[in-house]
View: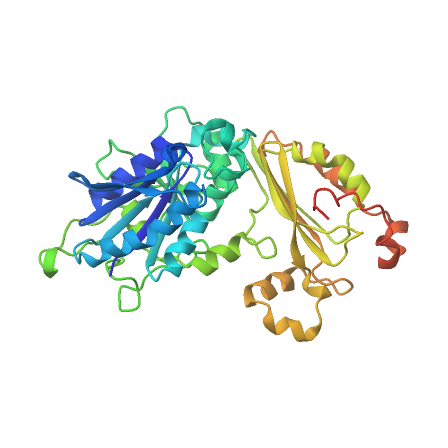
Length: 438
């Protein structure tokens, strides 16, 4: 059975290095790439190559004037064709610059294929510049469709935070602060150094070996990030992704090949699409923990009182610009039953409804709620108002933690406003109607 690993990221040089490493280290592997840069001409160019060079190249037409839609339509049939050759062990899907791995992992899985890994390649020296870049993708020629309104910052943030494995370029320009920022943005990720010149080619980054605080070595045991599913080495894992020791089998079960390096092991380790999606859902997201090291801080702000809509709206610009990255869920007094999603990067904020708080649902509806959502709500549960709360996380170099906390506290309901109750809260001015497109 064919194993599929998805490798993406806006940092093209790092991505290409990671793909080259996998191609060189995993026997019987190929790389499938759809180049969306030709979309202006009405087509997407698809290439397949192995370690020896180009195997095939073809064009596929746009679908509804959308390059990313063409990719979705063509990806699974091409992977099935590769699987049918009976020779290929691993298909490396190299995503074009702005394509996000979540959608593609879900497309491949829905097509009946086995995704064994999702990897985002990053240059640590470019993490802060990209998080701070509020330019539209369209302005940089990186839009995946005519209607694409994403920015460089929010696209990069989602690419980074979805993948359970980060392939980290060995950048001479990156310092401890850059590595620490990466570690705090995605503390549960397996971060693997891509050292093209080293003997092993790829090495796990370890906090015990002088790496940044929070770094974790690659491990085949439990405790990895959501979406990463270690294999037992027995039946039940994807074919071709064994054994856990990293030793590859030779052709037709002959002499074993040399042990796979950490990146190749991660590519074949297994991936749970549903768990990965749950880890990003605002109601149950695995958000970073409080941290402070190498000039980078993460503030976790949790309160059991709603925001006053007008005061929060007036403070939005200052709050959004206070950190390179902020995300989480929040509670507005005039919408007491609605869980709202906060997602900010590059000085821009996206606010949207993520459905009802569980506390607002009738008991009968709880049976239809996924267990992971119920578990997340239980952690936040308050005897008076259930899972309704503020849970926001801010990560940035030079973060003014005290100033940010004071600003956030000033936006909460006062004791008098809180005591007035929900009926009075709902009469407060609906300052967020425009942002929520009500």
